[in-house]
Length: 487
Image (cartoon, rainbow, N blue to C red; front, top):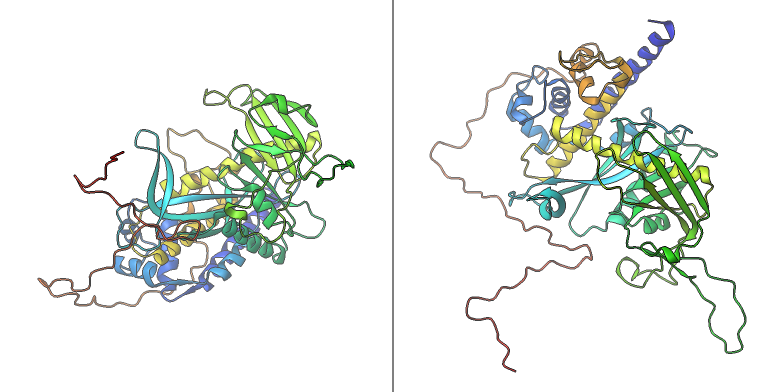
């Protein structure tokens, strides 16, 4: 090993140890149990099936009662932990800019009638690949993306959405707080490339761009294929009959090629996975906003939010499916051909967040525990975030402990699951600030044969709609009482 490699490993080891100490300082009330639970999560072999398995890990020196007590009654200083995450080394794009991906992932709890703050979560792929609305907790995640193909991301923030929350408004506040923390942590300085925020079609990217217009960020999001945009208003021409000058130009209909005209930019790129990627860009297109829905309470005139619309068409998909055109909207009003190529290539990196969701759900067991309270779910979600961050910081220190049937890979290309296999050896060399548990006897508990006189409260799902109005269940007519038309 060269001297430079030894220096990099020493620096990575110091960063990991410092983050572990910062995480311990963020814990209040049963913090030792929470810290050891996170270590057990990292050192357990195989996927996490139940919380009891974590209590049996040697890194968790307490009983299973302390484990559940830490999740239900432990406290984490979330604001302090967020600043610690923002101060860690972040992955960056090839040009040095920070690229953040925002997405929502559900924690489904359909049968948890005693759990509060559940919403209807939109899911697909269940029940013969149908779109279903299943009760659960919705979490909005923000991660930093790497350049190139990778299964690694850097989770920076997670917020649980409450029933009736406005997704765009909550996301805008979440991004605003995160960007402020990144600036205060020295991750972004004046003159650096603007931070890119990449979202999928479930977000109103134009409204997000308007809400975040005062920040050094640019929004890039996917649009549905049935959208209609507007071109800039033509120059005003005096007319003797009078009339107001037009506010919008001609229509740009995604499904009608006759309204496209000649694109402002057009490129063709040869790729290894998609064949030839044909990208077309139209500058200064904006939606025609109406005084309704999210804009119904907007004071004054509705804004004109201009951006670049990009259409991407590829020859084939890696899965062999039918390649449909991809429509993107970029908050930059005009773009050069090189910038258009950079935009759609950056958007393809957004799907790395799906690897993150798969890792925390299938391996770390984010949605495995059957916790009752939403506060306990928040504690568990932050433990998952801290555990994944430690895996990312331990990436330069990990050794490939592969199975006999697995293909060897270089140390710099290890997946999060492979890094987790060897984390137990790294933990033995780092500091463990958690104190040794004191021996104690369990309490007597409820006398045998006695009934539980304190039943848990039951909660309905989604008491508030996204519009802020209360949810009312539909009334059903009894048999034989349905009114009939007589006329």
